[in-house]
Image (tube, rainbow, N blue to C red):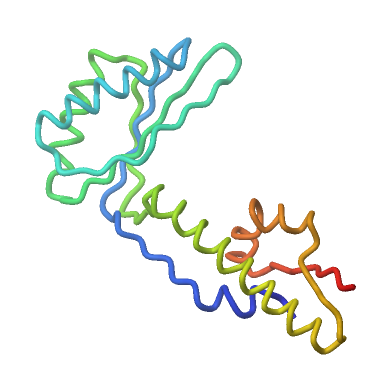
Length: 173
């Protein structure tokens, strides 16, 4: 029996950041410069009182160039044309700035995903041990999770459960 059968069916993911998504990216020769450009643009947008939620910044390096990105979720779609107009004006000061519309999207806040993973790990370990105890009783033995699998439970298993392909290996003696 797979653990995912009993746990993943109970999982409920809630998105609470929905709206028009706009990705803004900046290219530079260092992480600091690329991120600072995005922060300047972000400050500029906040000063104009756009009602948006930003997701965490990401950055990647290719050869000698760093591209930093942030996704803004505009909660009021009526402000979209004003935001685009403002971004076009900002682009005059920051030629490496690129923005693209991603359309209406919903996202999980990063903190919510991390909390979900922690809860899932706890539930998985508890459920796996419960199943090991039942299995051990039927065999008349003591069963526990394999130590290597414990690490997998801590790191990989939440994703595997979400994908519906989680398994447990027990050691019985």
